[in-house]
Length: 124
Image (cartoon, one colour):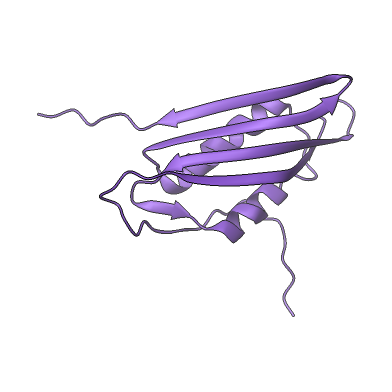
């Protein structure tokens, strides 16, 4: 019986409708990493919205990718930007937004939203 392990590898599959703009939303309410200062767990609810181009993100690999942060320490802003960068690198979407709602710590919640938009190709 194979065990599932966290992984930084993101798998993709061909977009079944690359001629059309459509939106995909991943709702990931159980993200966990560690505070880089205290080592205590930080919890977040991630929402990843994107318009695919030629490739789509495969769900199980996304789950294992997000799980890979569980024992890593990083600031909220860095983690959110790292997730966007990795997803953009994997699937080169037309547009993608990653929104992370970080649960209360010291009486303060943090929301971080980062966006990527593919630049239009120049003609000529």
